Image (cartoon, rainbow, N blue to C red; front, side):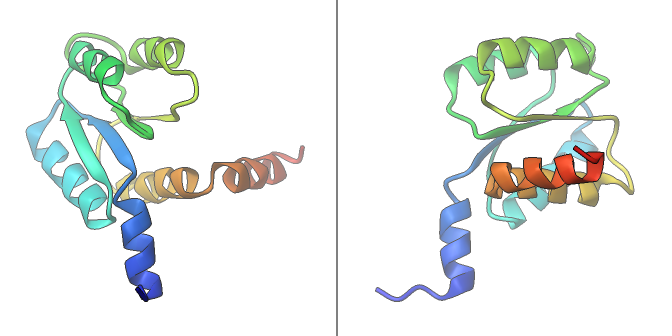
Length: 127
């Protein structure tokens, strides 16, 4: 079976699962749409507690986590997520806005090639 390059990448990405945590429904809809359009399987949560429960029960490849949650600070939720599943990348962000496409590209780049992205970040850091 021959799969075109675009189809192969879409097929590969369809297996990448992202937990998206955002407490505002209007922002969640946009984030979920952008991630699904990029080929990700998205599970959404609106509170830190819900996100932690989902993280313990689901197999996810990455987390996009809003900082300002109604029940906890995103930094505390992130720390607990890293305790539960230290190898799952968690990208903490503060509100959806003009920076959102950049954040999603960053998450996408990391999930597609974490070793390369870490190397690029070390290069940027001068290390």
